[in-house]
Length: 332
Image (cartoon, rainbow, N blue to C red):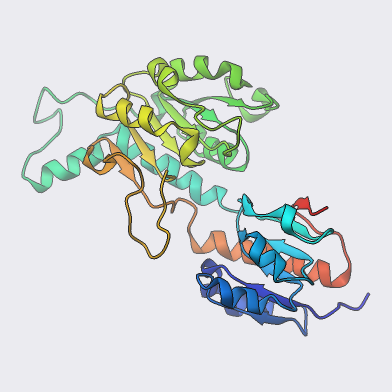
């Protein structure tokens, strides 16, 4: 089948550095528009005769401005900001991944920084203090990853890849998921279970990696009762969504030293515009046992180069009348 020329609107700034390669990968004759994603009016105008929107955001007002839309393709895994119900019947919503390698690197490196006390050592040495058991007997010896049990709350693309890296250091792994479908033996885990086993995981883990998606069943999944079951030296790494972990309970556990520390890459508040604003309702920045990052664990060139290739390939399939991949939903 001869590909049908399409009009594509790209409203995701993460793809701008890859614009040339992305456009080169599209079928011949494809028209591509790059409106400013922050200007809803400009995006709506660009969508007037477009068949494809590349964005993780498509509220009802944009859907209404795009009568010819056939595909909304997120440049990542999340599609919660795409109003599928507002799309014309038959419009496909698709996503892409490839963030698991970068996020796994983040989880392991953040864990090492916190478990080994490198953040505190960095600040201390800048002030002239050698915060090491060699020079100060009151400083406890740190533990290596080989001595750790790593508990995974969620074991999809991110959890599985992160476990591969932790496993290379000799760690022991356990996992819980909503449906309990993980084959522990196949993945080299000590055991796996459902969220009903979350308490057992928290009681036995030195590191807890949260990568489960946010939804009605997972909002506040880790709250006061769960923190009370964690070990006092446990490091929590959240790369899923902020509200999976109750914010009040998290701040209390960190400030009260109920747990050892946390690496937080996902948050409770995000800037409406620009790049400034507190990420939560508590002063996490005042704590010395927290590594704070701006939802950047998956942001590497490799991540988005592969995502751009996935999106271009799906647009090619749409133009050729072929079955699309990574379909999340179809509007009805």
